[in-house]
Length: 204
Image 1 (cartoon, one colour):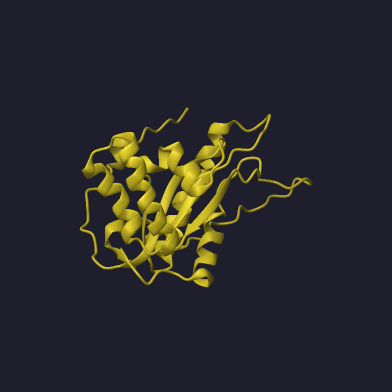
Image 2: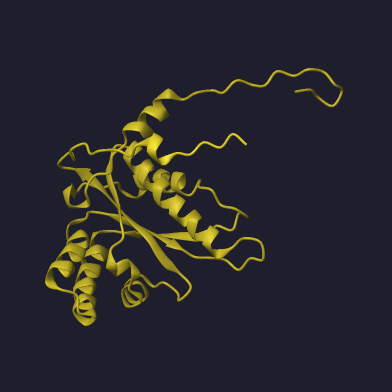
């Protein structure tokens, strides 16, 4: 590589962060049903949210927003899950499973895809960006020492639930609900994807 005057320039060497790679290679979500209080308070949650929003955002549209659910809101929403489940005709098992996350969780953050009108950035790319916020939020919570789990479930896709319970507009959708709290039971390790089986290398 040369500068504009033709002088050779050395490429800067990467600055590895082995501790970050170790975290990423060993991170594990914690099942939401095992999370209990205490959860991060607002001061402790703020840097986690800040890290989550440092996500890829083509066009700098900020096509997402966050809703933090504290315990009173979570319990209110648990009741709405049960009511909506009955209206929609879900079985008791499906209703109990969906409601239990809201009944026992000490804290949750809803990541909402809120696409912006754009001639350059397709809506699907904006939704992908909201998905990136979910993963960044999950990893930031885990890196801060909390247990965390990214869930959705049928309530997240029910317009009656998200519009009545969360106040979403017709153009918005829930991409994920990240539950955060104190881990009470470590999950067992599970098989991980086979990189070689899932990776194709193209040299040209």
